[in-house]
Length: 436
Image (spheres, one colour):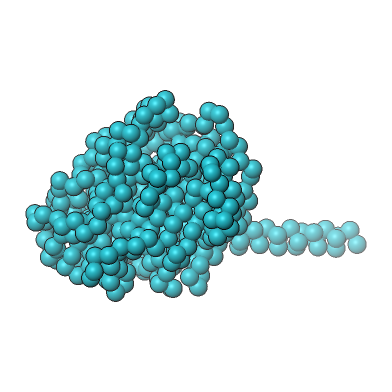
């Protein structure tokens, strides 16, 4: 009898182990229903910034099994965002924050400026778009040219027909484009003002075009952490706008999104999704960044609540009637990960496990101990919605001493189906392919 009980327990243990192997547990702070701790409002917020120790020529990030990684282009100037043109050319926004003198006032502002310098994020903006073309035998871009210059902290890029749209920190511009050209010298035409000003806290503005090219969707981050500059300073911010190309008219499409950076169209459903960088200073495990489908007219909580209807008591006066309408985001991406990049994988080059899922560039934390983010993750999708826990795809951006060799931001899929990663501290564009 003892032998049968032992055999039963052994089988049960093996079954449990197999089940865990087949269905990994969801990490804390991730998934559609993350466990949220009570807020830990600290008088002196945690400041834990990874100092810069950039890659040597021989170093590279770590990739998941079955993958390889190569520097597609080096020695760029704070490359932050990527856009792949139909002919395979890759546009890189070499950019940094514009002048925003009122964002660094006071003791807190001075501390943040010092920490940004420590993190390698206080360099002047190159204000240009660089074009990378081709692939040599070593996996490096065959040519590089200055495609557009003289911009104002450019970020998002979108091509519709023969019109290329660039989202500067304060305006959406239109340029003429001819396939194959390596530079644009024609002046841009401003088609839409975007919130800027002397604070311009979240200065990055992104843009994506609808499949039919009728609309452009423009993301605008908040002008503060949780409205501490007054809600008048948030006019038109923490939102995604819809711009109609034929009429030049714009309207707010969705609100309550603290800092929506990455935007992409989900290939199965055609829905617009965004990756949102959430608020700070509520403790190590609040508030999780997230990605979500974007519903027209929806309110996602900021600044009055987070992850649905969890009230942020710091915001005065409260707006309970607005909180009651707040939509719960689709998928949490971990607290303070600075989840910025977003790209759905519609290629076939990478292993099948990545197809249809989302790649997220996590720039990395400053308000958390221990660090979080500093990697590119993949979230699997099924039937148009997230279907499992995240998996690390590109990591190793922090060395063993907690120094940042790089920080991933924008992610994109090139024409061949490889994953491109913009590393704005390492000044590299990485290219991820199957291992040989």
